[in-house]
Amino acid sequence: MANIILLGPPGAGKGTQAKRLVEERAMVQLSTGDMLREAKTSGTEMGKRVAEVMDKGQLVTDDIVIGLIAEKLSQPSAGGFIFDGFPRTLPQADALADLLASHGQSLDAVIELVVDDAALMGRIVRRAEEMQAKGQPVRRDDTPEVFELRLREFYKNTAPLIGYYWAKKDLRQVDGMAEMDVVAAAIAKVLDKA
Ligand code: AMP
Image 1: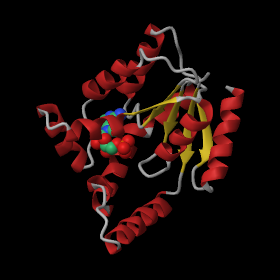
Image 2 (image 1 turned 90 degrees about the vertical axis):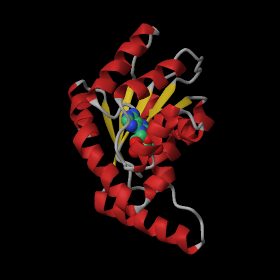
Image 3 (image 1 turned 180 degrees about the vertical axis):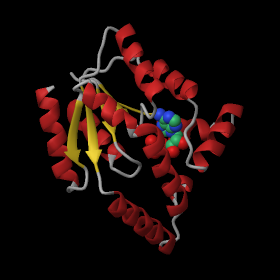
Image 4 (image 1 turned 135 degrees about the horizontal axis):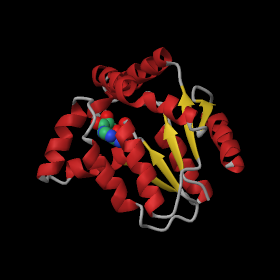
């Protein structure tokens, strides 16, 4: 079993790869983005505040996401946890280490999906255009405008985690621009060594 973080900018394919790992390795995916989208639809006061922040492409406060993760860590996870979209700030990274330690666990690897930002931006624009052409709704924070803001948040707050985990010798880099199956194989290789 392994506890891993999938790290990378929005649109890098973290969620897609996490879902494969859930199916193939009985791991448990903990996506703060999914949890927040659920809170958003709940209609609670917290949900409304969260919606405003998410729709602007900004980050929700550390307290909220740390609380969401803390609630989930007591569940059994035969294959280990996949942290998808968490941590996104250094305080979140510290909180995760403390939370895992308090459950007698630790982090086995941080897998960075390395991408080409310009190509990623192109992918997002094309996807939004395709959805619009088909009359399908585009996720509110997946429009090219908000995507750009989310990318900016990534570089401002989350990219420092790459250096942090590298210095801790936890970082493993995988080419996130490769075909989905090739990315999955590269991740599997990291996990088999963890
Ligand atoms: P995601 O689906 O991971 O791209 O997350 C969608 C949105 O949820 C982000 O743009 C943020 O507004 C919010 N969010 C998700 N995870 C976090 C986190 N760990 N810290 C702060 N905000 C988050």
